[in-house]
Length: 192
Image 1 (spheres, rainbow, N blue to C red):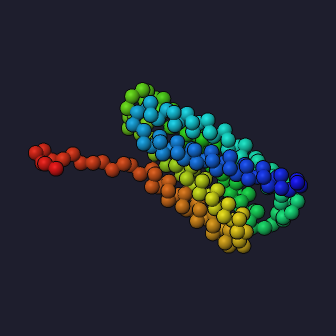
Image 2 (image 1 turned 90 degrees about the horizontal axis):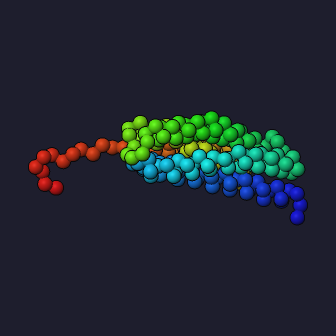
Image 3 (image 1 turned 180 degrees about the vertical axis):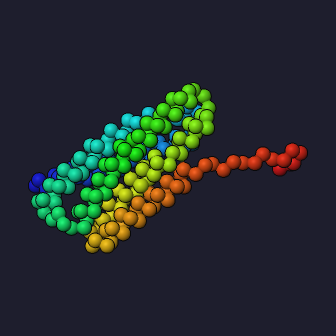
C-alpha cells in the first residue's frame, strides 16, 4: 500500500460524504416542499440543518487529497484538475453563502409560522429560488466534476461538461420553485 492510494481512498470517501449529504439535503428540500404543517416540515428542516456540517469536511478532504495526488502524479495545468478545483470553489461559496443563508431564512419562516398549517409565507419559503438553485446546481455540478475527472477531456470538453451540468441544475431549480397549480372548484350543481 502506498500513500497515493491511501489519498485516493480518502478522496473517494470525501466525495461520498459530500454527495451523500447533498442527496439527503435534496430529499429534505422535497419533503419540506410537500409539507403542509409545521409538524411535517420541522423534522426535514432539522435534518437539513444538521447535514450541512458534512460539507466543509468533504470539501477539505477533496482538496487536500486532490492536491497531494496532483503534486505526486499529475500536473496542475490539466483541464480535468483545474476546472474541478474551480467547481469545488463554486460549491464552497454557493453552499454556505447561498444555500446555508436561505436555509436559515426558511427555518425563520417556519418558526414564525408556529404550529399547525403552513401559511402562505412559510409555504412560499419552501420553494425559495436561491435555496433550490444552490442545492440543484451544486449536486449537478458535482456530477459534472465526476464526469470531467473520470474522462479527463480537453479544456473545451471539460468546460462544456461543467456548463451543461450547471444548466441542468438551473433547470431543475426552476421546475422545483414553481408555484403549485391552483385547482378550480367544481361549478355548483355539476356532477363529476
